[in-house]
Length: 119
Image (cartoon, rainbow, N blue to C red; front, side):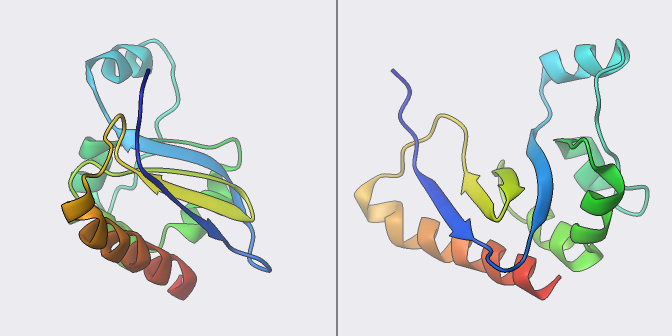
């Protein structure tokens, strides 16, 4: 059983394209070599090297992932994001936040949500 802590934001009335973003791992690197999608941002090589981003609506996602949002994400250790329409979730894959770390997790999630809404 996998347990993890997740923060969810309802963006209504804002809408995001469906997407997923997670730290790029060895399996991702192989998948990308064989044609798997990874949306890279040329102006942000650190972000592009660190994260695999997928979306069937790439141009819309590029507009949503502003330079300030990408810069903020680069400062976060191994965060994962998924979005679909009016909802976005923030989490660290397979990690359940301990009670003494919950306040920091909530602060980090709020920081992301604030950056996203400014975009």
